[in-house]
Image 1 (cartoon, one colour):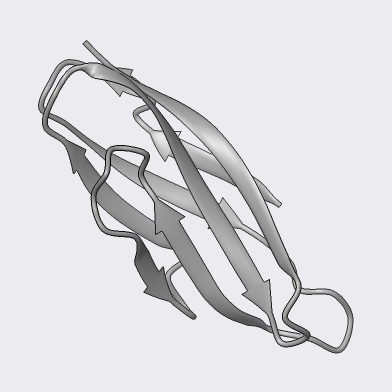
Image 2 (cartoon, rainbow, N blue to C red; image 1 turned 90 degrees about the vertical axis):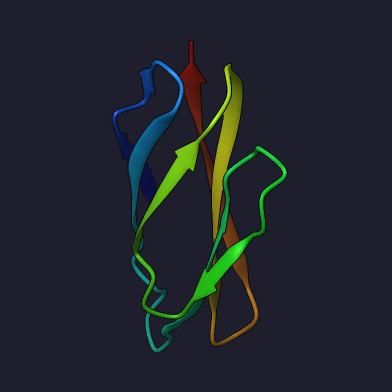
Length: 85
């Protein structure tokens, strides 16, 4: 599983596109991508939401996290730091 953002840093307000790459275990599928942007905004969910755009309105260092859920109920998460100056 991997997580990328474009860009990962910039001046406020910063709009970035986050993209997750995940492969479900054999015989399973991904049932949810849960995007937590680390800035107290609402978590965004979707079974096909591999990529999303988010605007960071203020300065700070934020930990964006995507959690994938598989048909078995297993979850996997990965984090990425977004820096807004």
